Image (cartoon, rainbow, N blue to C red; front, side, top):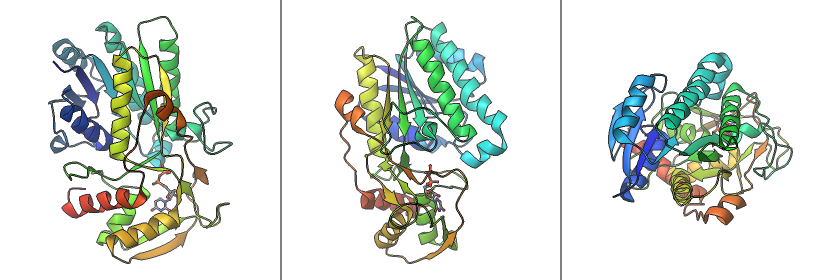
Length: 327
Ligand code: UDP
């Protein structure tokens, strides 16, 4: 019998890719999602319970029936500018709801937890590539909520309670399932690769480059783009590690090298074979010039081996998904 994994936010972009791999590997999956941004069609394996993490009764009932061996927690609000405008909503959704989830886990004796954290916890790092030991110094409410949960997890894990967790700090997640069954499907996307492929498709009339005067070789920001399927695999190795009795850990999820905005735009034009209008625009507030992971720890400690460290492939899968018209 496969282990039972409860996946919050499993109908969303990253969660749905992880659910696909879990299902393929024989895990028994239950997705708990309020479908505020997720989609029923994105849940390829297991049962979907439409529920909110603020609704403790539904959550308890779900734990009682499903009796998970471990929880993967993707459900969260993720739009940085929105978090600046509506901080309370972000703290309630991302922090208070995570507390609910952790308390219900404790009630039912579930002691293994995988958390979707973010490179946003580092803010503007003092040095890059940024190691996991760098101070948490978020510069927006979204990053604050992720850092707050990380501190809660650290304290719970250190309290003597039976509780072990892995926090995965995602860098710039992009691309889609190469089989084309799931992909990014979120209204008003702000992320560079999604906006660029949508512009190539004609959905937007132009792509803006936010800032061309950064202290980088071509003046535009550098990011560490990781393929969503490699990120999904990182969750699987983290889960296996916890199931085998591994201790609490925090890992960066990136490749350890980056590309500039201009390099991404050129790659999108080449891969799609479409030219589109690109205009230089002012800096977007809160963007660090360079954000690249020191990505050694997860390889060394968990044996994670990425397969798609290739910007062209990332863009190609994002483009193919976009052409399917579900994004
Ligand atoms: N960016 C851009 N134009 C866009 C979207 C993003 O120039 O339409 C830049 C953004 O300023 C940042 C980089 O692309 O330097 C990556 O931004 P994204 O929103 O994809 O991810 P973030 O690094 O903010 O998580």
